[in-house]
Length: 380
Ligand SMILES: Cc1cc2nc3c(=O)[nH]c(=O)nc-3n(C[C@H](O)[C@H](O)[C@H](O)COP(=O)(O)OP(=O)(O)OC[C@H]3O[C@@H](n4cnc5c(N)ncnc54)[C@H](O)[C@@H]3O)c2cc1C
Image (cartoon, rainbow, N blue to C red; front, top):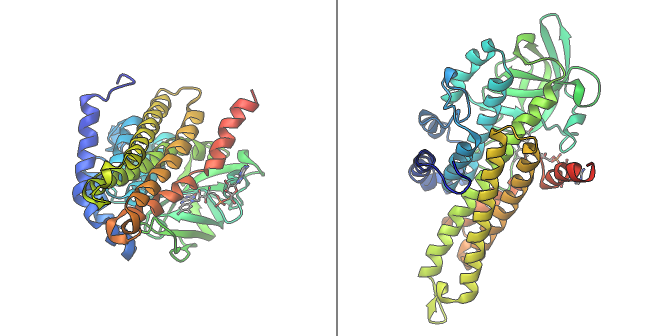
């Protein structure tokens, strides 16, 4: 790819995901939100098209694509439903952690099922007392022979209760980041249970629950990499995860902008179409410009991550903040353009606003994105 144009392959991948979103997600998204329905069957159809393991190696059935392709896919899926796209992206992130840091035996055991989304994965870092300050996590894994005995609570876990594998950051050593390890905990592990499905503002088409570990016995062979590597593994996953969540915001914003353009042409006030008012034309122009600027920047960060650039983490944090802040603002402006109708569920706009709001909070809040960027600036 040149920095300014997508290749034919990129366009084909994006169009494939867009067509899937238009046919399989968009027509149902408002109902899934209302009914709190998690469409696992539809996600499996997406996996048949290679979207369950976008940047997973081909030897275990993954699509073997890069972060730019992932950004194209998650943006496209999010034009149909940001919530479903976001879950598929989290599943991809957790699977990638196994692909990148797992042994060959672990990769062959778990990844073929994950890439087809026959089994689903969740990412478990946050705890009730450790959100932004994730390295303060307290979930303890005590070694007993060839098992760890795990006690603790993971908070706000996307997909919890339905997912089959929980890629979980636990404390095996001292306080701080160096005492953390990563365990893959299977759903049927005795001592693993789930809290109630949280009632929340958006993201209703996927469950969010506590993951509760009470004397859960996890085989040592389920640990990814060495003891003490867990925080690095968690943060490596999040670099790409943040691009994916940013892409989901772009997709939601793009759908909201498209709806606004159609609505502004059709709705009349003061004897003309809304789109004839220059104030609204300027608003639409700004929305399109902010979207394009955010998208270009996200692609730049994706290319940096793929290239292993030394500033990739910083660029991913910058791009996550820009894409999720601008994405939310565009969706909110779209609601305004729809007037009172934007506030009604049937138009699908208020759902996008609700869904995109949480992207400014999770996978690191946008304040924490600034912490990451500032660390490089001030600490220089
Ligand atoms: C719907 C949903 C799904 C989620 N899914 C997952 C999941 O699948 N897996 C998972 O592990 N986690 C998940 N999370 C958790 C999410 O990542 C955390 O909520 C987030 O990291 C913030 O942590 P916190 O909620 O504890 O807020 P806190 O860390 O308590 O932060 C509160 C406020 O203080 C600010 N703040 C904190 N520290 C600083 C600082 N140093 N400088 C400036 N401001 C600061 C924050 O930005 C925020 O505004 C999910 C959350 C939600 C809401």
